[in-house]
Length: 236
Length: 236
Image (cartoon, rainbow over all chains, first blue to last red; front, side):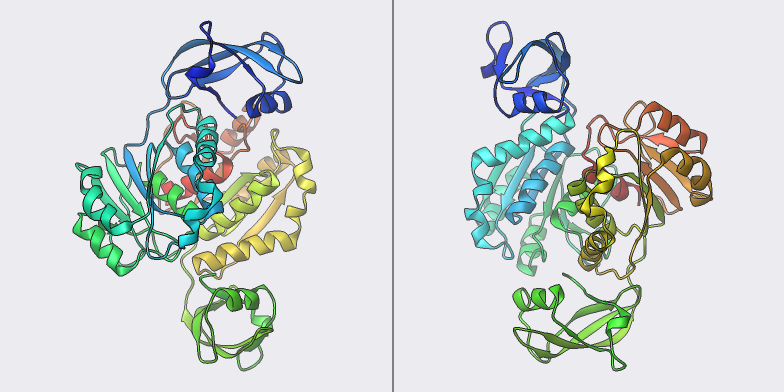
């Protein structure tokens, strides 16, 4: 936890809060705190500053937020379309992509996504939220990504994707004899990443019809979580 | 498993082998095989080709390697110096960096590496080997990375690193007001990545004295496994 994150609704009028949850436990077990200690803190979807520790015991940590005048790091100018990964991979991918600054994520069904993944407890809003928070705390970011579920590929791509990807460079990561993924972009990008085993031809065709250009990363086949990080690091 | 990997010593004179281990179990549980099936296969530290399934049952898979005439993907032209990560992170980092093509890895002690990590069962040669194999199987690679342990930072950097990093671009990934990490290199690189919490000043100084240039990835603090993938994807 590089940044202590608090929701505005947790704070009283003096910007104070008493923590007893995971954050308190982490502060107790990992940081060496006492009254008067200061640590980096931020308000969810707001600014960053400092937390002054008012009281700290085995059972709770009472803090006051101060100097909330630093904006969070700039978001990546992108929307990520990700074929729903298997649950354990999803959890890690959510943390990676949040840490790297993705703010809009679409988790979508594709032909090679096992339908059972949609029933996983990892997709419960509170589980997703927890992984996003961990990613934000790691990157000292406060801006919670938006996560959208699209359990039907064709209607999503045909009816909603044109609007969602409007005015962006549309890229489709796909192994094969395609141009290499571009580097160091500053423009808005919509990037589609397939499941283990990749998109099927029909899906590649449909995305190409919507203006998506296939790009490759080379002959090595990467796991989804490795591919997500590698593509984002290369694009921006 | 995108590539079935076999050691040359496992094969008889006809290039045949009977598998009963993890590989057989994976073939049985994940792939739909029968006598006559073919799948991509390779010889450890050798060439890639096909495995023809001669016999397949619940208890064993008997195969014959054929057409071993495809070289493995090109290695990354680099040596990676990595502060020993905590055990779970090490396991995943080994798979990521092997999949991405690193062939020489130095795991080193630094001030912020907990000494207890060196006692972890994850450092046993057979555990390391297993993670390297998984990374190779994922990337359809056959060239096993070399993993070197350096439990003493200063003697390693002063006495061995000059020779190890000779004739390479020497980079040190470190957050701060440094130039951004370069992109798309084709030259030989030696890259040092610190632990959670980073290198301490003394370590940065010592590496700089050996010709290492600090480079940064931006203000977001990445977990080690994310940083490894992001740096490799950006550099090459």
